[in-house]
Image (cartoon, rainbow, N blue to C red; front, side, top):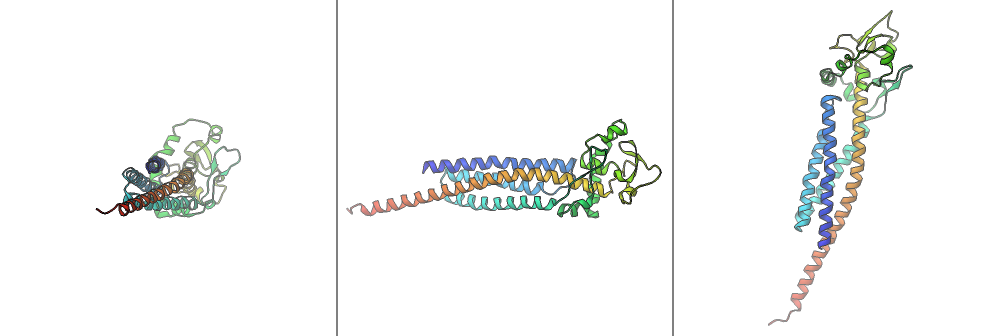
Length: 278
């Protein structure tokens, strides 16, 4: 009995520790949403799940230490629901990002991004003009393009830079438009535009405009968020596998404890019946 309780308590302690990476991933997404991705969605469900895991693990730990059957029942049912929620959220994160990635450009190290290359819920969400106004304003206020303007380099040096998806999509015109590089955020139209891409007309050398209204900028955000969500989801998959294993072992330990309790109660009853009446 004591060994089984120790096992259950130890498993709950591990569950408590594993909730920390879940909350850490949510905080990381939140920091990126404030400074880079500008898309606040996945972090709050993860924070709620992580906090719930912490509280439920503590309840299970207390239930194991004090042999409280009510707390152990609560722990097992709550963990079952939380694991289900984390599975659902992880599946959604993979499915919502859909397919799509940047495409290479001749004589350029950085990739360029087109919104039509992406699919899934995320691309539709970011592509919605009403929703994009908030995201585009966030990107502009983050100063990501303004920081690029501080560098002084030649066109050849710029073409060899590894730009982030947002820098590539929001801070410069698409290469296919035929603009001539002057500096990182100032491009000359030259003799005329060479592509029918609507983004060619949306580009502006005004630092408050640039390509914040371009589909390439939206695609850059989708690519960035997709990368962030995928990283967190991969970690969640690993944590989920460990949680399921811990849950199975904790359930078996709980069943073992319950069986021992029933055996003890049955033994006491037989002893009472076996005692001679005075």
